[in-house]
Image 1: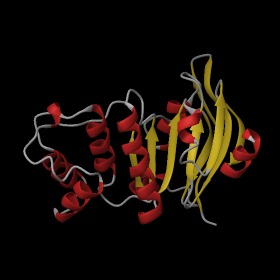
Image 2 (image 1 turned 180 degrees about the horizontal axis):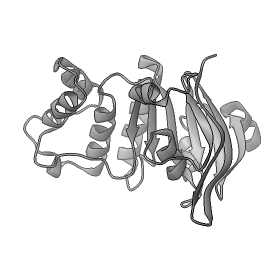
Image 3 (image 1 turned 90 degrees about the vertical axis):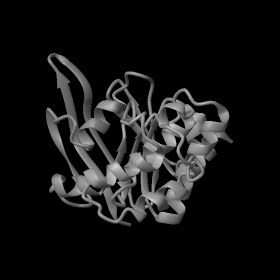
Image 4 (image 1 turned 120 degrees about the horizontal axis):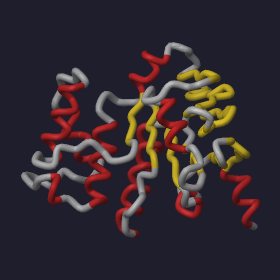
Length: 222
């Protein structure tokens, strides 16, 4: 089984405060890896290091078995914190803009993604008039431009109503099953992750305290 992501003793300090502490984790091809921890546990900081938005203080990481992170990150799609959408544009215009930013010349990719995320019927409706769930699906759609092999989602269901949560869950499962995209999804809601994750990592005060499979979690609940 191919290793998509491996962190080796990854540490991040801000001054005298250690936010991520000696963290080693492994994500395999095909995983939906549920990264669980309370708010402030270090989830977002780790994700920022994986995606290149923050530099580690110590340790290192490998992407797709390589230390060439610049090339590896070209194969990652990311949704971190507030999605960067153009509110005065339609969903399709947002996707076409993202294609241009990434040098994707085939605009049909925008249309196929629009269908995939369930927004093909939004027409001329501006993003500013979208529900939170629709905006979150569009954010995931933007991260799919360029056909990434790894999708990194930081708290994608925060603030969503039950219908919006189900839509995001169904979309993640579809991307994993139909497109073989490996997914790292962080959340503080274990109950929701249990509906889609195949493997889990639990972070507490910056430390990864346990990794286990969905089968192990089922046995724990029994």
